[in-house]
Structure formats: C-alpha cells, structure tokens
Image (cartoon, rainbow, N blue to C red; front, side):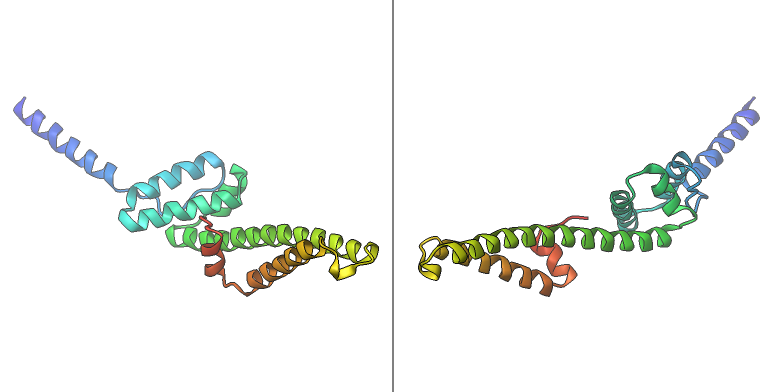
Length: 166
C-alpha cells in the first residue's frame, strides 16, 4: 500500500509539472476557437514583459481584425515573434486610419470655413472690412495651420499629440 502511494505521489508531481509548460509555440488559426485555445496556451508559457507585449499585440490586432475568423486567419501559424510583427503592422494600420480620420475632420471644417469666407467676400460689399470677416478668416487660418502641423508630425508625435492608445 505504501509503495502504491509513493508511485501515485510521483505520478501526480510529474503530471503537475507537465501542466506548467505549454508545448504550443504557434497559433492554430484554422478557426476562432482553435486560435483562442492556442493563444491561451502560449500566454501561459510567457512571463512578465514578454507576456505584456504579446497581449498588447493581440489587442492591436483585434482592433484591426474585428471579425473573429479574420483575426484567427491573420494569426495562423504565427509564434510570439510573428504575432509581434503582425502587431506592429496593426499599429501602423490603426495610426494611418486615425490620421486619415483626423485629417478628414479638419479638412471638412476648413472647407466649411472657406465656403463662408468666400460667400462673405462675394456678397458683402465691405469685403475684408466686414465684421464677420474678422471672425471667419482667423478660423480658416487656424484650420490651415492645423493641417500643416498634422502633416509635419512624425508617427510618434501624432500618437502623443492626439493621445492615442493602440
């Protein structure tokens, strides 16, 4: 009986030891469920900063690929380094998308201001001396300056200026 207990105890220690280390090194993206399972296994094998980076990359990728099947497909066959590369690509995708949205918003406001200034100059005989011109022209100039500034920002400066987190 004592011999059986020792064997059972040794077997349980070996089983517990095997649970701690994941053998999965690449994501199986054949379906969303297999991707989720392999991601979980890989996460369990990572520690500290490496795990944090892996999780941050996954969040960026999920922001780009909102459909679970597309997300799984984008990660299929990727190891930790591969996920990081996809994550960098997603960061750039999200940055470019954000920059395009910000630019479009400012361009729209600029165009509206320009339309008002042009209308005023065409229809008010006082032209630049009209009181409303003194309100509208500085607004138009401000939008022009914002666009010029935005175009001159590096990616990192843009992220910081607009307080983006992706």
